[in-house]
Each structure stands twice: as structure tokens, then as C-alpha cells.
Amino acid sequence: MSSICFYFQVHQPYRLRKYGVFDVGSGGGYFDETGENNRNNERIFTKVAEKCYLPANKMWLTLIKRHPELRLTYSLTGTIIEQMERWSPETLSGFQALLATGQVELLAETYYHSLSLLYSPEEFRAQLTLHGGIIERVFGKKHKPSVFRNTELIWHDKFATELESLGYKGVIAEGADDILSGRTPNFIYNSNGDTNLPMLLKNYRLSDDIAFRFGEQSWSEWPLDASKFADWVASTNGSGEVVNLFMDYETFGEHQWEDTGIFKFLEALPNAIRAKRDMDFVTASEAIKRYPTRDVVAFPRFVSWADIERDTSAWCGNPMQDDALSRLYSMRERILATGDKNIIRDWRLLTTSDHFYYMCTKWFQDGDVHKYFNPHESPYDAYIAFVNVLADLEQRLTLNSKKIMGRKIISKRTKDEVKNRATAKISTTNRKIARRKGVK
Image (tube, rainbow, N blue to C red; front, side, top):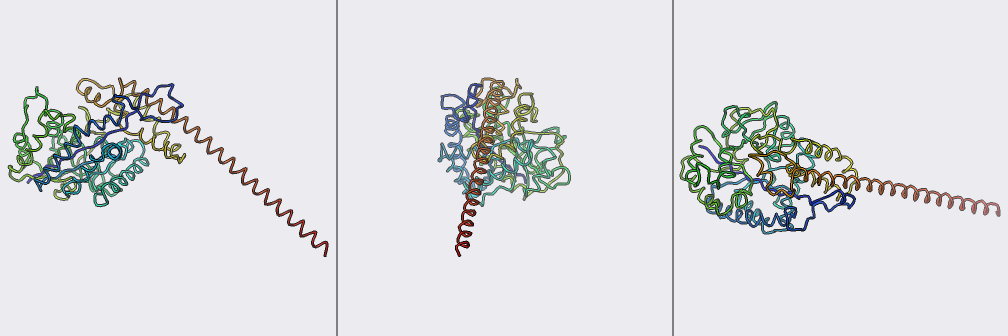
């Protein structure tokens, strides 16, 4: 017996508008592009919703009702949920309908799709709390996640203790070849060290057959139909227990356009899988409950699901990225100390990993991926816009500090004035009493 675990990442950032040096001092509006370009967040979201979210949700809901055995796992960032509420309540209703079937599960992650687990454990925990709050508000307490996925499946051995201490029952990560050392990703593994954290590892070959190669006519396996893919998955039976097919939700209709046949492929897949003996579907938590861990897997390096290197070089691999990240996270304590909700909100929106992804200077195989939904003309433009925004944020911090200092001075003056008036009143009263005693 073996199972398929479908997991879909749903995320859109708030992209920065073109923010030049002469914009520094304007005091905000970093994400408020209204032009017809890739910096207009509403425009991009609406486009993706029409091509992917709405038709994909409708298709999966139909398939779930038709196939009670079908299971799906999603993670939705806080920013994508906000955008659904703001620009497409119909899209949000679609996800709520999927969750209501009882055949769909949500995973935990950082609210802002950030790299905070790498740079600030305190901010990481804060964003987990924020994410849990919006999940409960929008989907209800019963959908509280028990399995965690880090931004872009970034994982390292040193994270396991933190996640286990927070009560998570498992994590998902990338099944990189060097990490597995010849083993299959189709078993559940245990985290390395003193922790007991089950790990579901992505089968990147089968996942990428759908996510990247499906519509590629130069691919030797093109066109891929459901029956052929079901054969590939079924071939793991006997040498694995759970095939983890992890991908961006935008695969359906946006990365792989409708005219590639991607929706027809998915519609036929449940029947094709059911035709195979001893194959079914599970959510992430169901897989962890059903199957034991078969071995320990070590992540001595940072691993992600991005690019051919499967590391973190897409976000922190060059001096621009490192400088931007260092500046950003060094501001955290001062940002929170302001107590200003707008300043804190803008700073946290800047922690979204996409901003640093746009600064990536890698090319060749990964170049086209880094250009996708990129609002900037080059990685250098992305960096310049970001550091200009940080400069503006620094000015807002300075102004906020002056306001606080001013309020403290005014407050002290007020206290002194009250004290002086009270002292004067007491003195006057004492003199009156003294005069009365003198009369007697």
C-alpha cells in the first residue's frame, strides 16, 4: 500500500512600487502601485485568480465531491488571504468550501512568507502566531495546522528543536539527492538529532513533471496523460509508502496554461490512480499518522525547493541580498519599540522573501523562473528600491522617536504644572487656616 500526498503552496507578496531616492522622506506607500505593470499588486492578484485560483478551486471541489478518497493539503500565507479578502472574496470562499469537505488540510507557516526562521527566532514565532490567528479567523479553530512548512521548504537540522518545542507533529521539506544519499523520498523520515519530528520529503522528479515539464513540448515524455503519470507513481509501490507531490498552486492555469491540458490531466488523475491497486490519497497529517518513520535524515546544510541547487542562494546568495537582509532584521527591535502599527506592518511586509528573490543574479536554467511576476527590471533595481524604502523607514523611525520624546517632555511639563498648582493650593489653604487660628 502506498499513498499520494498532494501539497500546494498559495502565496502572493505585496510587491514594491518603483521607489527612487527622491521618494525617500515621503513616509510610506511602498506597495501602492496603480499603473498597468507588474508592480500593481491588485492587477497581478486578479490575473492569477482568474487563471488559476478560481478555476482550480472549482475543479478540485468537483473532484473531491466525486471522489471521497481524494485528499489535498494547502498552505496559504497571511498576505494571500488578505488579498483574497480585499480583491476576490469569491476566491476565499472557494478555499473555505474546500476546507468544509473534510478532505483538505492546511499547514502552518510564517504569515509574511519570510526568512525569519533563518534571521530572527523571535520574529519567526511572532509571525507563526499571526498566521495562526488569521487561519482561525477565516477558516475556524478546527482547521488549526499541526504540520509545518517553512518558506520555500527551507530546512536545516538546527530548526527541528524549535519546531518540536512549538508542538508541531511534523514538517515537510525538499527531498534533495545529496540529503537522501541514494535513499528514496517516498518514506517518512525522522529529523536528525535529539528530536522526534516526522518529515515528509518532496519527490521533486514527479512533482516537477507536473509543475515544470508538463507543457514543455521538447520533453521526451510530452504529452503527459493521467494514465502514464499514474503508472509512474504506482511504480513506487513496494519501494515507498508516500509519494509527496509538492508544488505552487499557480502551476494550474498560470505556470501551466489551460491550453496545455493541465486541468483535463488533473480531472482524469483520480480515476487513473484508483485503477491502480493499493494506491490512495492522504493529507500531510494523515500520512504521518498512518506510516512510521523508516530512517533518520540529516540536513547539515540549508535546503530549499528552489532552483537546481536546492539551497538558499536564491534569497541570500549575493552581497545585495545579504546587505538588504542584514539591514532589515537589524531594525526589528527599534521597529517594535515604536508601537506604531503602520510602521510595524510595513516592516513585516518587507520581510517577505520575494523581495530578496528579485535581487537574485543567477541565470541560465533558473533565470526565467526569477523573472516570473518580477516587478523590477533587474536585480539591481530591486535592491535599489528596497534600500530606498529602508531609508524612508529609518526616517519614520526618527520622526516617531522625536514624537515620543516630545510627548514625554509635554507629559513631564504637565506633571510639573499639576504638582506646582497642587503645592500652591496647599500653601493657600494653610495660610487661610493659619489666619483663622489667629482670629480665634
